[in-house]
Amino acid sequence: MVFNDLRSYLRALEAKGELIRVNEPISVELELPALLRGLMYRGGPAVMIERTRENTLPAVGNLFGKWSRILTALNGVEPGKAAERISELTSLRPPTGIIDALKSLGELRSISRYFPRLINKAPVKENEWGNIDLFRLPAIRQWPKEPGRFLTFAVSFIKHGDVTNFGYYRLQIIGKDKFIMHWMPWRRSSQYADAGETEVAVVLGPDPVTMLMAGVPVPHPLDKVLVTGVIRGEGIELTGGSTISIEYPANAEIVIEGKLTGEYVKEGPFGDHVGYYSIVKEYPVVKVTAVYSRENPVVPVTVTGKPVLEDGNIIRFGTEVMKPLLRQLLPEVVDVYMPPEGVGYWTVVSIRKRYPGQARRIMAALWGLLPVFNKIVVVVDHDIDVKNMKEVTYAIAANLNPQRDVVVMPEYPTEELDPSTPIPGLGSKLGLDATRKLPGEYNGEEYPEEAQAPSEVEKAIAQIIDRILANYPKHSDE
Image (cartoon, rainbow, N blue to C red; front, side, top):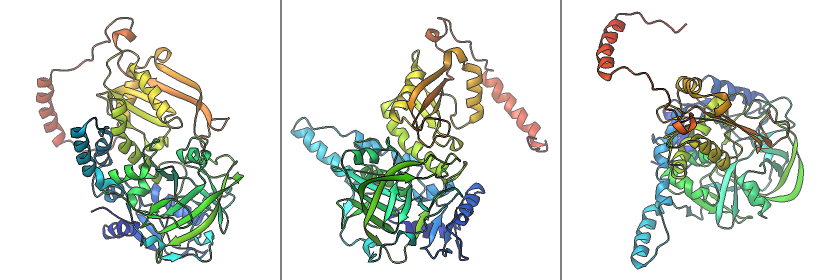
């Protein structure tokens, strides 16, 4: 069963004991964020805050703070398995004749279940807000030096021609009907705005997979709504905007329709996902043209700070989703992992190595595909488990010669949120080639042979070890 809205997902979590309700009033100023951070750090459940001191709408948080809840959102399907369906889209090719055309029609029918469906009577439009007041929403101020309240889990939709993109961009509320859109220049939506698009739809509480996909960078010209339908296993139900020409999820809790005013104002500082306050910079203002909601809507909230928080699982989800597409572009890639502690800046990738310099090619490809992520890329051989930092550390120690295998790419685009760069948006990249070296990289010599015991000896001795350890008291590693 595919979750068509947030409510059905919340009911599933509650049935599993993974959602608790808090009825005592919690302030959206500092208190609610502290509650969510504490639950995330300690592996706690999702939480519904039914009342706030500011009398806002109810908030729900820590939706994806555990990997098991992400699997619940996907009905138990691992993200990588769901993403393998993307090959059905990329395998389509233009027909070259009548027979090919008929085959293409069959292929289109097979993937049509992923296409979005437009409906008129949308639950999200049950109520029109005659009196627009964004302060009714549980926008939060999570750190003392933040200048106001922010919507942190709002999904912003924008179109460029017939192509739709959506993503997470924090929104600082500066009036009952105005907010600042924090999209950095390299963001796909920002590029659409630079191309002349001025309409946006800010969606609060779509279905859980759409929420997860909002944190996944999908390159232009792929339509992100279609890709999300593939991951869900079923197309998204959309409805058309009333004051804007953008379609958005029909079963969302709330939608804010708006238009860029052309005005830029200072936004921030904001305590971001790296754990530092981000810079103050001018970003575009959006004027609200309409607000619609379901009956008794609930608003998702997330928080930022030092890892590992909810965004760590969203990054992991995104890595798994994009892995099949990455393998199509770079067939030698075996696995990719972004440790949650690395907040998207640290990437480990394993490859089947065939020629000298291949690890550097992988580094360059990753930096080119996602310029602001992958600040540090570690390339290891195919037999290294990229998720096992003990194996990765060993590969670095055994195979990396600093003078030969460390690559520094200076003056390269980076994320403005990166506190290490004195010039916001411009930094450098580090690549570590921890692969075993081929003769062409090792002065024409064969790399030293790995010491291995015969497999029959290992198997025989393993049985003896099992008998010894069966009667050995277990101790901690300390």
